[in-house]
Image (tube, rainbow, N blue to C red):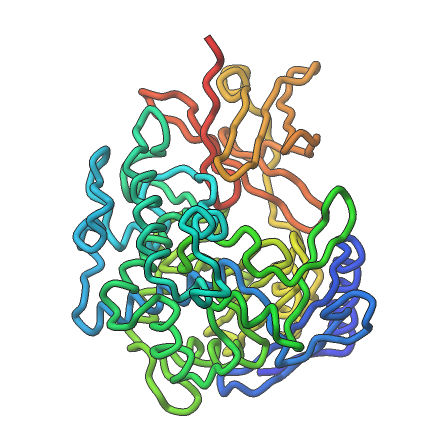
Length: 473
């Protein structure tokens, strides 16, 4: 039920404008829909291209980045319901290039919840692999549909995952920990390509998700949005200067299942309406069974401080509401979808600028819709201190294959200090082995990962486990 009050609307919109200013965001599109897919709130800020003054609208194409993972999980669940696969099957049964030689059996279920046991790895980029293969998109067509590229991509991903060992690359046994893994969703997209009955992962989504839902401006294509006059220009900071591009290949993974989707506000309204009705579209078409949707939204792995991850979506409590959601981030992309069955509402936030905290905006609008003060009240933390032994064992460099570095060090006063990618951050210990990095709009949860054999060997840094670098001998 729409309980938007004028005072709360103004507070929420002031927050959005503050975030836009602080992060130099170019354009933001936001909407709230009810269970029937009826728009209850919609607003556009900024522009789809700097200097033009032209605002985005409901048909403007944005990148979705990791929101794609919800589409991948939905497709896998469809295939399970059709008897094509079983979530408890070994991944190697469907992707023989992945031999699973250095660890216990990794199942489809593990990959859906990011619990295959892998630390973050550098991206295998679609442009680089295509160039090495001599594939010219102007000649072979859009790379999202190229079978030879997908086959080479899965070979490289599988070979790299197979090379991980307990000594280097594995964070634990399958199912033990969540660590966000684009490689895992890459393998899932290849299962869809091989067994979904369509020529490619992109074709499968078009036939089995987008077309039934009437999502006519949603796809995995790279070329189409670069040429569409109503597609957002992508903005990121290069040497401190905001730089725009229509290159939708930028930092794109070689396999599409983790982040290749592009869509519009209007199309995502149809997508979220389907989730709010547990698998049934507003036109009456059933995309997935009620049970399948509930399985996707069931807590599987700890995610952050208070949340969990299911299959391609995460979930957490916001006061008395359970929020199911997923965000995405790529160069020129900050996206978030969220819905609540208790509120019978969904929120969509799309932005064409890197690194914008759109999840904060999403939370504010969900609270506003429910008649509550939208300004985020920080989670209540019991601040504490780490003992000398914990500080001694935690001190060191933690280096992610994706490029993030975290340094924990002992300050002159004996307490713990932290630097993230070389910059000092405010670290507050909140439990004997946990801390938060305090940012202006939100907190990032930190957890020390240890066992008897390896000691403290990693940190949970938000959604990722980052391994501790071994001192040079």
